[in-house]
Length: 491
Ligand SMILES: Cc1cc2nc3c(=O)[nH]c(=O)nc-3n(C[C@H](O)[C@H](O)[C@H](O)COP(=O)(O)OP(=O)(O)OC[C@H]3O[C@@H](n4cnc5c(N)ncnc54)[C@H](O)[C@@H]3O)c2cc1C
Image (cartoon, rainbow, N blue to C red):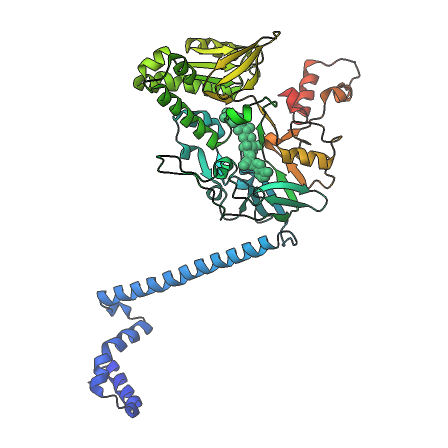
């Protein structure tokens, strides 16, 4: 008796007879046909283990290929769309309103992380392609914290849903709603903080195995970009109060490269002081560190430096630390940390005294030179020289040129605050009628309604019995009602 499959094979032989396929040949392929028939008729349980494994591997392979193909295809399509949109950026705006965010600092990043990209096309423009954890900069400058732990790539933070372009915004046209961006006059690339290092001409000093080169191949042209909404979060820059020599000879502590430069300057000072032929006066100058500015940044740096000297350098340079190292903090007011509670500044001053940090209060820096700082005491005409090798300038911040430019474009009669862009409580820049420009962070100042202008009407609002006085309950009601409108007073 023939089995069903053999009958089937016989039938196939008849069909295939014109091609001279013998019954013996067909018998040879019988297992394959059987397996396929079983698969079609749902009898796959008869499949051998090896066959099953092969089939599964084949299926897995097909799924993987199709999956990868779809993934890379979609990615290429997105890139294609990205570049298309960006090359048209000065002319057209797509289906979604375009939001341009300037900056990758504390103000911009939370917004970029939470903005709804289903509703908006979001583009971030900044000369810095990473987020910087500024409170840890003093620790980086003395080497307690490693550089890579205080930065996070902006692309990994915001993901591919937000477009990022590394460039400086140099102009804003609020009428046409266009920003102009450049990278340092098409000279070379700008990475915000390390542009000075890149601009140094190529040189190889004697004996150096490494050199700084000027790589002119990486040039980026100027471009324009249209926006529907612009968010300005460009921060601030160091305020030198036009003190001569600060730009040339003092270190700032604002960007990552500043911290790295300070770190290498400290190390350099100690190594130079170790040279056997160094005179005592020169050794003392080399190991004198001057910090200008008794605000949080200056105080934190002074404390970190004192810790470094006491805990680490003491081990390697015991003689120098005992006799020659000196840290001086200069403050123009009569207290350090003057914006904080008096108890905090008193405590810090006492602590610094114990740590051998000399604090010069009521003292102004008149000039910073390569080997000294010229100071003047309040109410005195006398100038004094402090020989030193490392000066850290931390006297506060001022508005960036772009912030001032935007203030001028809007009108200085409306934008009257020199510290930054005046905004309403919703962060809309004052004087931009269509509300298309927002500002936040160090470059902005919220103009809150003045309580004094409204005090009379507020009083009457809760004085329901017209007694001309408020009881405790009425006063509490007033505070609860107005706390969001006047947070600066009631909180
Ligand atoms: C050493 C140090 C310690 C600090 N510690 C504290 C602290 O403990 N607590 C605290 O509250 N604050 C602290 N601050 C202050 C805090 O860092 C700032 O208030 C905060 O960084 C302000 O955020 P921002 O987004 O406005 O500006 P930033 O964080 O400075 O970011 C500005 C961004 O704008 C970009 N940008 C600049 N120019 C342009 C341009 N033309 N076009 C486009 N993008 C531009 C910059 O590259 C940067 O990405 C500290 C600051 C320093 C320097």
